[in-house]
Length: 409
Image (cartoon, rainbow, N blue to C red; front, side, top):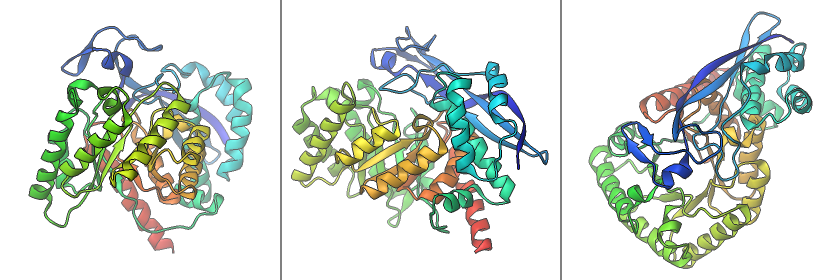
């Protein structure tokens, strides 16, 4: 099966792109808006609607395989690609690369496209590679009348496991009402919390501690004794900032978070955010060591400065984290995400197959197949921050795929 044509369609992502540096620097929330000046390259305002680029590969039989390219919410920060990227103007170059391409197998087709891309579109970033790889995976699945999960399992020599992968959801700033939704719907890991500035964390973390205690009580009240989700908080370096980079004090604080959780397992993503990859790796490694010395069971999750496969290898080999977020649009292609999960597993690190609220329904569905094939510790419900929609998309795609896999075994 060959590609006969290419269609590019501008679209919407699931949330907003935010200038996190400006938010940390004091940009003032005004409803769903932020007042203040942007400081990160590529941003014309602190908050801007998330945008996507739909890439459609028309096949010889007339069917179209779609993928969506987009940047993450906090583009341009901590080593990530800037917010700008190719738009409809890239159609001619992409058509030259893709028309006539054989897509019966995913990996060879992807390798051919990636080899041609630098010359056709110099500077093409991770977002475009992500969208193209989704479309190519979808094309290979259509060509072989298989699910995308089955294509990945066959081409990466992975077993087809007919079991769900746990789901992790994020509240956004509606961290109380949206947490209730998660508890009622019995999400496996929650709530993310978006603890991205001092106002949400507290001068010494008192606001997060209060929130953890509230969550533990709410889970008991609404979920019952048999519901024991993992508490996963993304702290965007706030503990480290609050305690002036004093890692023993950060470790002592995380112990207090664990106690407040009332026996529920706790994960803290980005407890510190240091200036560069090597500093981040060493800081996270030392913090993990301090927690183990104290007998603290909090798992620390790498995110900042951990974007590419090379970054992921460096964090894993250094023992710098208990889990690592594979942020799919930043890592690059769907293949890179599969390899990232497999390298985490081989290195004894749990993988969070994540991404961003700025993704689309299409990219979220594709990510479910990546999760079912590569088997991370947990997969993110996405896109958006509304909880209901993201859970519906991810859980339903997983249920449908598992039903097909079960029927074909």
